[in-house]
Image (tube, rainbow, N blue to C red; front, side, top):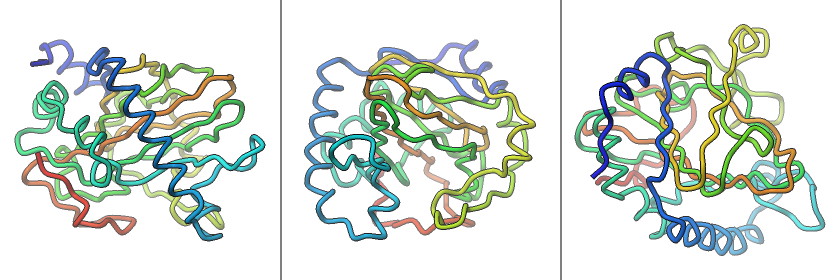
Amino acid sequence: MNCLNSQQIADYGARGHLTVEDIFSETQMDEAITDAETWAAEEIGKLNAADRAWYVEPEISDRAILRKLDNPVCLRPVFRALAGEKGLLSLVEQIIGPGPKVFFSQIFFKAPNGGGPKPVHQDNFYFGPNDNESMVTAWVALDDADESNGCLFFGEGTNNDNVIPHIAPEGEPFNLLIPDDVATQYKMTPAPVRRGGVSFHHGNTLHQSSTNRSDRWRRACAMHYGNRETQLVNSALTYDMDAVVLF
């Protein structure tokens, strides 16, 4: 079973994020990508015009490509198995305490040659938990993620700051972000992670990802864990509590 050492725990507390490599095998990542692609093919034809504007990338190829899919841990057994992997859960519990449950999860596809950016934001603004220390995001790299294909960038130590008000750009009510005049005050540091590794970050930590400028995919699954005491009391968006998965 995986275990964080004292230096890793200290780094997470000081920096607000921590990368742990080699949590999942190549086979597990292959299975996850195959399932994600199957699910995407099933779902893309069902989207109405409003949903397509949010879930489909602007045309970057000769076919429509999904930007993301929601709640894979609830809806797809392959991703539920990843979220319940003992080696992952042991790290999650070290960070936030016992009784882990996934409140929300997302698959991000970040297609080659133009998969779009995600602006600077804080997860705790989205979720509004009763205790900001009680949630952690485990960002599973299904592909190698680096600066050229859109790895995460973090604001070092911003986990120790307050939650900042976010805004929604016109026509993008779900794309909540920190205004540029505030976000540019923070230096964002890249956090590359190899396929099968996990990037953990605190809910207050500022983070973003850039456009995929490479010819490689940058697929990932974000799993937003709380502990047994966590409640979403001031969420900026509406979350389906029937989709919460307890482990």
